[in-house]
Amino acid sequence: MLFKKEILLFLTCAAGALGVQHRNRAATSVFLLAGDSTTATQSANGGGWGDGFKNFTLTSPSFAVNYGHNGATTSSFIEGGDWATVLSNASQYSTTKTVYVTIQFGHNDQKLTDYVETYKANLRRMISDVIAHNAIPIIVTSISRRNYNSDGTIKDLLADWAEYAISVANEDGTMYIDLWKSSIEYLEKIGEAAARKLDLKSGDSTHLSVNGSIVFGRMVMDLLSEKSPAIKAVARPDEKLSADIKAGVPSY
Image 1 (cartoon, rainbow, N blue to C red):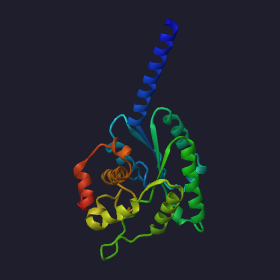
Image 2 (cartoon, rainbow, N blue to C red; image 1 turned 90 degrees about the vertical axis):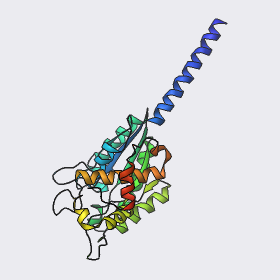
Image 3 (cartoon, helix red, strand yellow; image 1 turned 60 degrees about the vertical axis):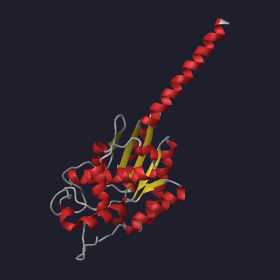
Image 4 (tube, rainbow, N blue to C red; image 1 turned 180 degrees about the horizontal axis):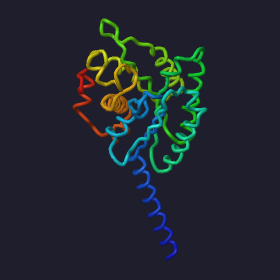
C-alpha cells in the first residue's frame, strides 16, 4: 500500500512539474530574426528594425536574437552558415520556450537575374526547416525603402517581392505580416522630411538609425500582435508610439 501511495505521489508531482514547464514555455517566447541588412543590428553600412524589436518590444523573460546579415540573400544566408545557426538555436530554445523565426528577405534577392523561383524555393525551404526544428516560422515582407516621388508617394521597387513572399506563406499556411505595405503607408503619411530623420546616415534611404529601428521594430510587433494573441501576450506595450505609427505621426 505504501509503495502504491509513493507511486501516486510521484505521478502527481511529475504531472505538476510538466504543467509548470508547459506554462513557463508558453510564457517565455524567443524570436530569432533572420534577414538582410534591413533586419540587422545598426553598423556603419547597415541596420534595420531588428534591434528596435529586440530591445524595446518584449517583456522579460521573452527575448529576441538578431541574425540579420548585411547584403544577405535567401541563398547566401543559407549557404553561408547563418541559417544553420538559426536552426540550431531554434532546436535548443524550443525544449523550454516557444520559438518564432521571422524571415525577411528581398532587398538583395531582387537585384539578381532570374531569381524569383529560387527566392520562392528558398522561402519554402526555410519554412519547412523551422517547423522541423520545433519552431514557428513567420514570413515578413520587406520593409520599404524611403525613396519618394515628387508627389510624396513612395518610389517602390519591392511590391513584386512582397507578393512573392505572401504567396509562399499562403501556400504553406504560414503566418505572415505585410511590413512592406504598412511601412509604405506610414512613410507616405509622415512625409519625406520626417522620414529622413529615420535614415542610418545622410543619403542612405534603405537602412535605419537607432530611432528608425525603434519605430519599425514597434511596427513589426504591432503587426505580429494583431495576428497572434500568444505574441501579444509577451509584448511590451508602447501605446503612444503605436498610436503615432497608426496615425502617421512622426515620433522623431
